[in-house]
Image 1 (spheres, rainbow, N blue to C red):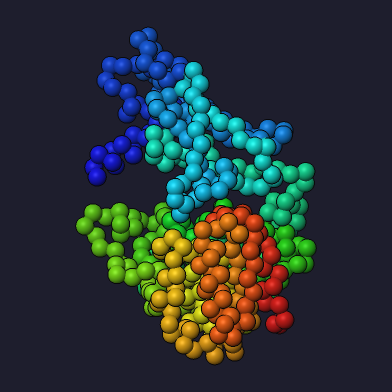
Image 2 (spheres, rainbow, N blue to C red):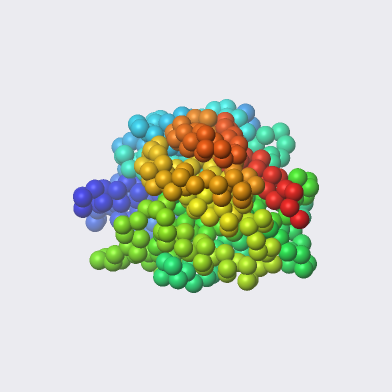
Length: 414
């Protein structure tokens, strides 16, 4: 295990803007291409070497580059190369890159359809990101602005709010979007609680899905009702990134969520959302604090949290939009096993819910599991809608899902 960790660290170091000093044995110098050379001073190989990646060409093809002169093999993966590139896929697809004489690996893909694509690298078999592109996303532009592009319209604000989470015994961030005009007005607004997926964080709907830009465009076009959007950390224990070490980082520390999944009834996030976050938001922001004006949605992990929490608490949320609802095991029906109480009494759902809308990609590995869940609820008389978007388990689907469903939220309520 220790050797695997060391090898992984070395692989990550191979992808860099400059040859890393840790890679160079004592007394060995590197030339300008990153290879050993006898006449190169240490200050030469410690200077950053700028590699521009990605490069978007006029024909909408994209060149990806990696400065990894000491690597034996570099491959690219991610939704940019098509099917079976998600971490849930088995086997996970990847394609090889070619190494140049300067030690820079490259590959050109496409032409691609206008969209936003994620990508990543496998360096000698180990995952690595693009050192010059933190989010590892590339936008291939179309002939005009897309629905997710910033336009010359009034823009809302995204607030970074700190709160004390008693349920998880930690201090956490919330990302809170307020619509254009909020700061200067006195109007109260409905609230959408929007959850991220597994292995990520409360910032992902802003950074990776551009939820604030999408809402700005919808509101400016009068297609969606102005609303507050709250994005919380959906993990069951520990602080947000940047606010102290999480329990798993502390040697010998026990996870606060040990023995729970993120979906078991009464799990720490559910308690935090219901007893901590919602009252905090209602106190700090100008909300309309009732279930008619409160929605819950999320992607992947956040999608199944939307289902488990939302269906159990339809007296709190009258609007539910699970997207690519994914349990902790790939493609399984975990919700079926832990939610017998929901299926046994659907009367509150029939009475309370104004919207239950599923969104999932037509190529998503979780498509069939989501469809079985929706079919089970429909067979019990629960009114719902099910939309299949073109795409895999990816933000392309969830971004479009938000664009399509936001106009339906809070429709018909004052």
